[in-house]
Image 1: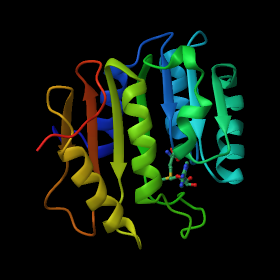
Image 2: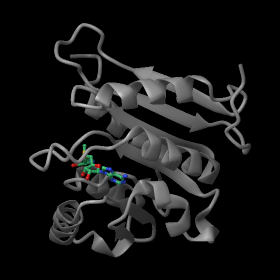
Image 3: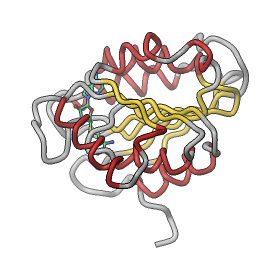
Length: 199
Ligand code: SAM
């Protein structure tokens, strides 16, 4: 297959945006796959800040990081990503190279604990000003579960209205797959400006 599958495409984007020493955010650590990937990209001198509301996700991710000897560059918080700005040190504000959100529920976990439109949007609104110029915010939007369609629609409305002078906004989706396939939204910061919307 020449067209990259969704998760491969996400990794390609992150690998392009993130260099050694960079500061990055995993807004939904879940089972820790993205956290490990990001920790490898930033190396021992970079920093990954990870968020999840579930103890199971934080423990699972920490175990995975320790197994791979990557825990030194990662700080995990068991709290909602809607508090992200309070947890990122001020010296890193404006320095974030990438932030990743995998929305929906924890695979093999409790399917009723899902990301929500209002908290996801709040986290995005906080993170966009904290990105460096050239930094990206990537969302993998799963929308087949209960409440998923509402989150998808709120996100599409929000990102479609971002000022095009300040942000490139991309949707990457397979249009002929069955059963609510996930899709990617990627926002790249073009210049330092608050994410005001324009009509
Ligand atoms: N990236 C993960 C991986 O590699 O396994 C998968 C993430 S999973 C699809 C979504 C995660 O978001 C769940 O672990 C869930 O607990 C978490 N979550 C839900 N609401 C959240 C919130 N407000 N802040 C942070 N995490 C949240």
